[in-house]
View 1 (cartoon, rainbow, N blue to C red):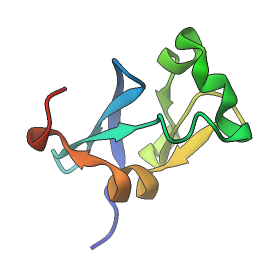
View 2 (tube, one colour):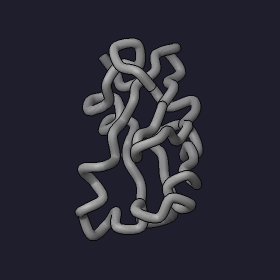
View 3 (tube, one colour):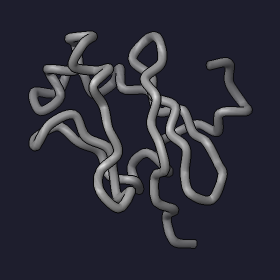
Length: 86
């Protein structure tokens, strides 16, 4: 199966993201494990974290030119939203 593109992203509490895909599925991606990595250090700042957006074409999400995640990463490591409490 090809990885579906991302339709929308919504920041949630506790450094999680609700990501909606074009196929209608939603996944929750936990960013807490990224915060310790140098590339993602700015995610510690709540305002920066909440500024997440979908990349053109839905091929990922990003905060700036250096801080981003692919649609594949979110799809594979995200948890189906109906299996957890948002």
